[in-house]
Image (cartoon, rainbow, N blue to C red; front, side):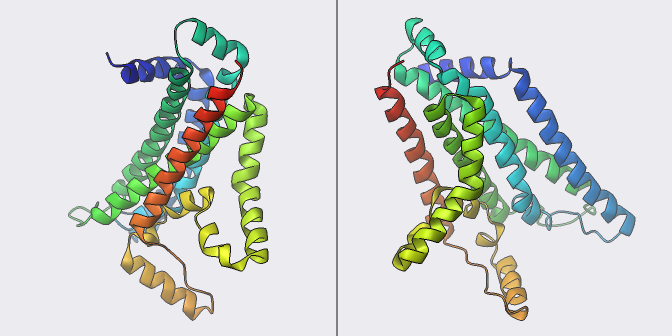
Length: 275
């Protein structure tokens, strides 16, 4: 068995033994079932096919998926942060793991957790929308939806990478969660607004700040030209600026860059720190 496989197996065994993993997962599934189930019930009552595939992918893979990003990150923080305490990390190194193996095991745990939550969200939303889909409907899952799904996975991994870095720095689940929420919900937007106001030329670069990039990479409008055209027309008709989306390959590349950069930064910090 390769070192990577062994680390992944060990981390999965530890994660699945943590009650917080199942409690948070159950709450997440309940929220998804409640939200999508309500939409399905209303659509079936109205008999208007409003909650059906492929039309609902734009919601499932877009705005509604933010709940998966948040819950996955919370689980990463709860499962991983306390593992970086000096006693736990030192004992694992004494037991035979190198610092690098120890850290990348935690990174693998973050990848697994993010992938599980994103996959379950898509399965629940897509499954319930399929119930409301009429037989013989075409284009239930196209290349556009596959690209959007890849963007959602990048977003989940990105949010988990931010959580892993915060967990590495703070080493306490409660404090790490507070810092993660503050940065992702408030701090980055404040920083972007402040810097953009003082240095206007930096605004195009600020559009690729970490959380902003992870939000953009799963925006369905970026992958669906017809949906973008409709959203633009509605915005112009209402006197609002049209939605701004980037090139998928550029935004995906930025997302991958941030995921790798944040993860490697955490490793560099952990490698230099006393256990």
